[in-house]
Image (cartoon, rainbow over all chains, first blue to last red; front, side):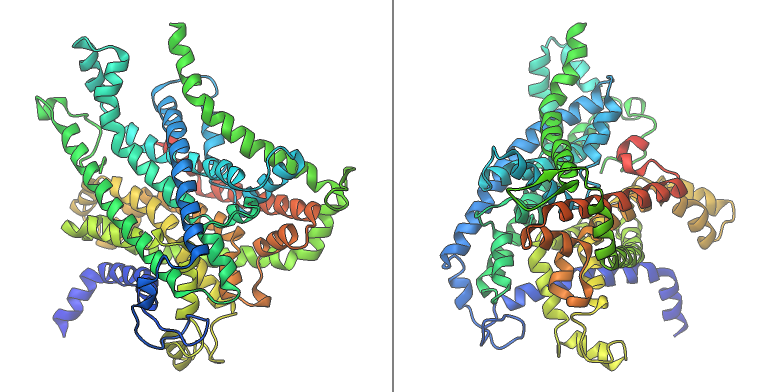
Length: 287
Length: 283
């Protein structure tokens, strides 16, 4: 008894931590479980029996599949644009001192500090009063790129801060031009950060409901489909697709983590480990 | 030399253009809209400041409720996320990456589905509801359509925004400082309150802001988990815009929401005393 109490006294914080992880995972387990449910009515809220029929029919609902494809197309385009634009901004902010740097930082942070409902409402006001854009895929893309940029900048910037610029200097010393240096040294090293930013942008875009709800017109994305369906019962197939998306994202996350760890190992290679490593970076800070 | 000075502006150009045109300009348009009168197609700009006092009179209940809900949710999220971040950063050992995965992965499922899962978990007669009823926390046997359900949903959905900055600050912390405190005869408790906690404060400040701000504008949780008596300000703005098409009122309300958030954030930052909002630049 005394031993148990001693153990608990020492490890209570880890016990709480693990309990919180369980709490975070419970809804995922519920979604997985209910993707096998065989609901008697239209509402998939109580357990009534096991079936695989919804999994085999996961892409069988035409509107749903179409909405999913729209979401994927939108997320891919938004990710591409916001990652290129955001990486450029991050490079400028980390590597250059220039007039207006603080203002740029402010401009990047402020959209993240604005409630989504306000961003959505502002964009709708703009589109309506301007009248140039018709609400639909085009306006969704504009909106998604807008809210993804800030997140890409933050992620890429945090990777750039730990970047050892002497690697570039070495390339220049060895006769590489600025473009070759970027292609062969800079880009491969910041790639994991860029990839991480792109993944976050993709996840944010494919999941966005609030801003899309304001600016979609008649275009339906996956979250908008779910919201529309929630009024008259959500098909179980939605849960299956959600689980498929979840699986794909987790696999992609695993891949990015693996790449990052590899890049870190590469970046740590030094001719003289002790003398050359940056003095004020504590071990593990770049992880 | 001139080329070097032009490079940063070239790099910043496209992104700045996008953010100005599709964030700053729309805010200006919405501001203009908030001072207009009339209905769509027949709006008239006439410095109608009364829109602001009107929406304040009509919806102050929902405004106050939004900030109370999101304040409570932020506090609960902090109490859950801090031990979690501490565990992942210091106690997880070789399971660190795995644990980090388990924490972040749930939030890569669709937001709406996650909230619907909570609707299932908290529905009448579910194990969780029965348990809460048995221990006297849900005397009526219902959890859905109560403040508790909405706050629980908000807490769950915004925990990662609390967790990640705290984790980042704890992970950067130089463990030798804690060892030094221990060497100088600090008890574990003293070492925590005098070294670990102050050093993770920037993470706490960033986390609370990143949780509080979006949570106060949220309307999904109130929509799915709450009832008519739990509507938040986001629900009102949404329905004014998309259902009732009362654009001037909705625009004014959006600015009221933004202004209150701004004031709260400024006061908070003054007390917390960090440049957390500017993120990495504080370092």
